[in-house]
Image (cartoon, rainbow, N blue to C red):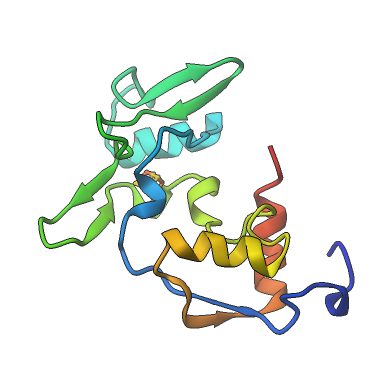
Length: 145
Ligand code: SF4
């Protein structure tokens, strides 16, 4: 585990519990990076016979592959119920980038970065307390780009 616990401002843990706002899956244009293995897992989950996610779901960006967005910025897999709640159609196999939100290097740089992220995510600073070890495990799973 990189860094000593006492060196990190979040050594006592941080609260986060998804409120299904969908804010981290929509909004300004962005990228949801998917590895080859993640693409295969999603394709299998969706029951695609050839085990491949086609152009309907993914796009090439340089050497990498991202999930597509709908017009307006929603991720192609974001579903809205009409009452303000959202779900991820591929929740069980969603990419690492999604699974590790909000415990990304950038958000954990400082309390200010964390609270800036909280401005757009109602789940941050709310609900379940994640321990330092749990946070670091997720942060290190999602290395900086
Ligand atoms: S794959 Fe699921 S969790 Fe990830 S951005 Fe799309 S809707 Fe959100």
